[in-house]
Amino acid sequence: MLSSLLQQTGGGEFHVINPATEAIEASVGLASVAEADAAIDRAASAWPAWRAVSPADRGRLLRRFADLVDAHLEELAQLEVRNSGHTISNARWEAGNVRDVLNYYSAAPERLIGKQIPVAGGIDVTFAEPLGVVGIIVPWNFPMPIAGWGFGPALAAGNTVVLKPAELTPLTAIRLGELALEAGFDEGVFTVIPGKGSVVGQRFVEHPAVRKVCFTGSTSVGQQIMRGAADQVKRITLELGGKSANIVFADSDIEKAAATAPYGVFDNAGQDCCARSRILVEAGVYDKFLSLLEPAVQGVKVRNPAEDDAEMGPLISAKQREVVSSYVEGDGVDVAFRGDVPGGSGFWYPPTVVLPTSTQDRVWREEVFGPVVSVLPFTDEADAIAKANDSEYGLSGSIWTRDLGRALRVSRGVEAGNLSVNSHSSVRYSTPFGGFKQSGIGRELGPDALAAFTETKNVFYSQD
Ligand code: NAP
Ligand code: MG
Image (spheres, helix red, strand yellow):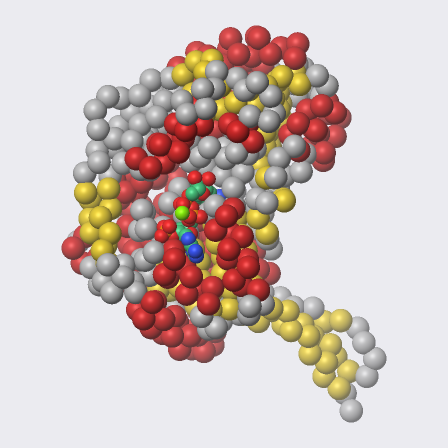
């Protein structure tokens, strides 16, 4: 099957590496500028017919696509384990999330309801019009869910979609593109274009037929995309980095807070924009918390991600391991304790707990994007909020307390788009997701996601 991936090769070829074994899994052809433009032109040509499909039929097609994703869930999950090194349990959840997002937004075409606004002399009505071609740029950390959060609502709203997977992790996106065709979408409605960010991603920004770019990835590339989009006043949604705080108050269930903290940051080997990579602990329970955290970190099952009980796999690449290591070994940071990793090949890095000297340390301020968590104490509620907000990012975070009033005050005080109290949950397809400050612009998922893929048109019909 994998040799059939060599369709577009004008932009060269990319060897997909299994991060757990370092073996080559597949060769994928990369699109050139001309090939990207041709795919965008086909998406633009497919748009008039797609937006004319009746709302009920659009919903039915999305449900058929969801059913096919469900029927191929295990295949998609296994592919993600080999391409991205995700644990098999995570990868199954991720494929299931694509199915769920498609089912959730399959109800949207029939519910894209406008307003009838009272005015004198006639009727005033609003319409939610699709934009045209939407370009989705996906990073390597969650290839399936982040793709689905874009294409699900974008297609439901009546747009056609071109999607660029990350160079490192194109395999599941390519398979999803094939399943969409099998579900009955016409050619050009949903097109996956493997290629380089500087080639295909850049064309999404520059090509005038692409009316909106959804980008998830680093803040620096997000800034470039925002600058580039300004030339055409192009719509953008940006989901960027994070440096989220996990705030543990002395009145909380400290045992539970410590037992769950590793999973709030080391999931997906810490390559998660929502990773709670800064733990803030109330000073009076700081020592107790650390003594409970140590066995919890050592208990994280870091192993071959294909094994059913694996809780953490390798990093995505040798380069990413170098980046992560530069924050710890490179900076001579004080390591409190760390977990184990398997020997042999693979881009492994152990779950690592570090104790920065202050909030100015690089490891405390920058997104490491690996299994490294920093712990610092705080004095009181105001200090906790101030330290949590002392960041250019504002994506996610957790608050541990049994005091309801404090939970209310702190959750309103922390500048972040997605918070959870007494848990580390941040992503549900039915609730909005996105960042404050430099963590991004706009929201994905939830009941309002279609607003990001439509323009409001207001029409006044004169009665005379
Ligand atoms: P990145 O460079 O921002 O890449 C994300 C996506 O953007 C990829 O598909 C990439 O293509 C594409 N891209 C790169 N340059 C582009 C350009 N000039 N125009 C349009 N698209 C472009 O992220 P990365 O290099 O993979 O990761 C670097 C760091 O970003 C990580 O260490 C982490 O801190 C952060 N990150 C955050 C998230 C998140 O969820 N918020 C996700 C991933 C990474 P290529 O694959 O060809 O580069
Ligand atoms: Mg990059």
